[in-house]
Length: 91
Image (tube, rainbow, N blue to C red; front, side):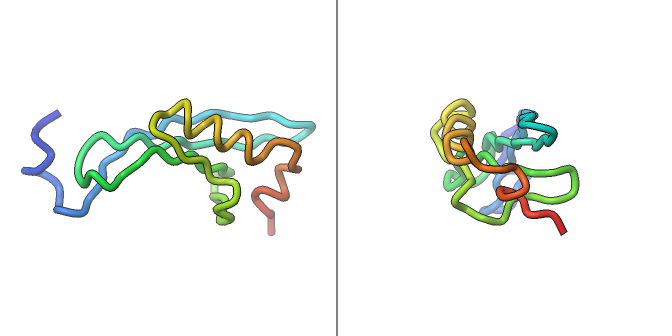
């Protein structure tokens, strides 16, 4: 990738998004892990549970880490034992 300083604004963070799918009981949820690849150094790895059209808004279930695997594992630990419609309320 080009030098991102030439193509991004100062506070922009460009990320690659890794998507995982978790099936639990008769439900499924996606977990999107954002990996910063350019721009502001304040970006970090963040794993967010989501449905196709809705992301989790409760930060208690959002995983953080210094790598894709760390953020994903942190998210999975946070949602372990929870009903998926509790993590992402529908309606």
